[in-house]
Image (cartoon, rainbow, N blue to C red; front, side):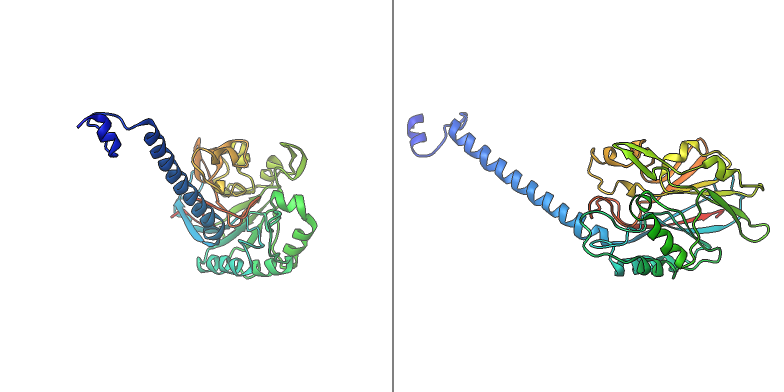
Length: 312
C-alpha cells in the first residue's frame, strides 16, 4: 500500500515520523497533563503547609555531653521557642497542647526563647496576653521556668509581653546570669538581650545584647548555658559556654528545595538555621520553634519542643 493511502486511512508508514501537526498535538496534550499534575501537587503542598503541618507537634531529643559540661552531671532542659500564640495555626488549644506535652517531659529546667505572640497580618484569632501567659504559668520544673525576649516582642508590644510574664512570675533574663542547682550540681544560666531589638531600616538593626557584660557576671567555674533568641551570636560565644540554645529561624519554616536557605532570617543563611551545630568544639542547638512568622504555614519543619539531656 502506498504511503499516501496509509496516511489517508489514519495510519503511519513504518519507519516514518508522525506528521508535524500530530506531534504538536501530542506535545500540547502531554504538556497540559504535566501542568495539571504540577498544579495539583502545588495545591496539595500548599494545603498541607497551611492546614496540616503547622498544627502538628513533635519532641526533638538531644543527648550528649559537650566540652565544658562535667561528665555524669545530668541535666534535662525543655526548650520552648517562638510560640507566636494566635490563630490560625497557634490557637489556644494548640498552646495548651504545647504546655501539656512540655510538662510530660518532666525536665529539670524549662526555658522560653522569646517571640510569644503572633503578629502577622493573617492572624485570625488573637490569644490575649493574660491567656497565653496563664498557659505558660502551668509549666513545671524543679529549677524553674526562665525566659528571654525575641525580636517580635521588642518590635510590637514590649510593654505588654513584659507585663504578661511578670504577672505570672516568669523571670526574664536580659543580659544577666543566675546560678542554679544544688551544691555539686550547679550551673549558670545566662540570658542575652535581643540582637535585633530596634529596626533602623531595611536590613539594619540595633540590638540590646551584651555578651561580655553577661558573661562577666559568672564568678565560679561551674558550667554555663546561654539563651539567645537569634543564633547569629554564636561565632562570638567563647568556649567557656558549654551550650547555646537559640530559636528565631523556625528552622527555615518553608523548606522548598534550593530556595529556603535564602529566606532564613540570619546573616549566615542556612549555617545556623536548625539543629545541633558544632563549631570549634562549641555547641549550639537551634530550635525549629512552634508558631509561624510572616505567613501561617510550615513545610518540612514541623512545630517542635526541644528536649536536651546533658551529661547522659
